[in-house]
View: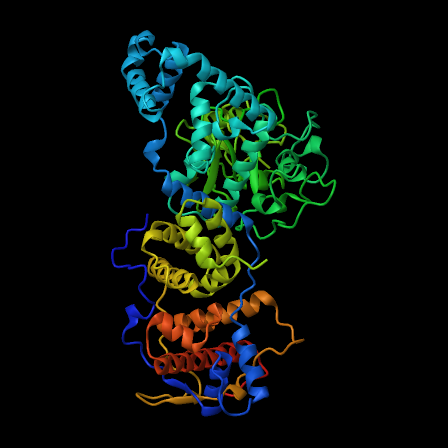
Length: 413
Length: 205
């Protein structure tokens, strides 16, 4: 949170400028009266319409062209909610495991495997606090389970995508206790702490327009994955040989896979447009539109979804599935020499936002990940590069390559 | 059906109704974002400050005096956050008002009277490229001192009367007037300079 002790909330703008400098410019009397009239002072004298109009036009210059940005409202709400829900409320993975084990053991901490027993005992005690001491009373267990099932069923009936909140890679219908806790927490805490994309927001105070867009896309992917059994957006199962012919047909364009989010109205076009890409269209997709018109319109490069292996949403491997526009594909598609370590042109070559399959994102100043994976290249090319650095600059990707494994991040076009 | 007042919405938010905050955010999305865009001169920055403002509203909810009006409080916080942002992000010092302007004649301690009738403003029907106009307006605004820019933008975007401003800021009515006069004069002058530089037809300097 902002840490500005000098800022009193009720402080007036005036307060910090107690001795506001008087301007060297001043208004002639008639103009001053026009200003007075504009700001609601009913001057006794007659209105000087021409002057009034001129003043009004001058001040109207102050209105900037601001486009309505629904995402800003959402992002602001989530940030506010996140403040309410302090981070420590999120369960650590080991606690989740312990709670699951507790549930498996019939809510008897004594039967939980030794390694998790301490945590399970604490979780049990905590549960007891929450429910006035009867949480794990065996006599009430049946009734409680019954109630739980009714809630699960009604959640199912209302088609609330609990996975979307809980964000766990389980099929619908197979909930774990921690999932339910997460879902309940999500409702209670305005869905802030367990929303799939929230982890990203935790990492930074500042969100740029680009990152906002990417987060919206991530959020849309989470909803899409909830509807399609954790699958990432895909337009067609066919593959026409190359995947960088943007605007041709979905079999020959990987961006058509990403465009699925706009086509099926999971995300507005604006969410798929990085402000750093001036060519990116932000108006609503036309009915029946399946792809961007050209490669320059595309803002984000997406994991190549052709080929035998595809990552899934919530994949724990930390594979990168989306990033600012790949500079490598932009060059390769035009037959120019590529620079494997270049950063995206979206931000002037300074770096790129990357989105992980687990829903988190971050700013990177290099296309290389910790494990050495270059997100612009498939592993076979990376190996070629390693083997023959001398060949850097030769056109070594042909637009036909696909990721070697699900955790081989390879984004385009 | 009468619209729920800002203060009523805020009170509902304070008593736990999260949707009421969303309603307020939506209600002020446009005016506040316009104000902030002009204040910080950067759209992404304005987005940031917008979020910071509502975070501060949330964090300070308990300090809000129910007798006061919500809008001035919101804009005051926004102005403070905008000032913070500028301090962190401003790449260059704003031009001082005393920077030599062609034909200003404003020497030390001297005052130059600006005549609005001499200032060229785009007339309805006269189309300047919107982005070009925005850039010029921002350049003109950036040359104003911080206090003058703030008072001009606060007054304009809140659409408040002198009396309300005086009440909200708790400063004398006369002071409000003279500052706003100075702010309008400075902006008119800066606009004249900026638009004169880019348009060959008004070369009066």
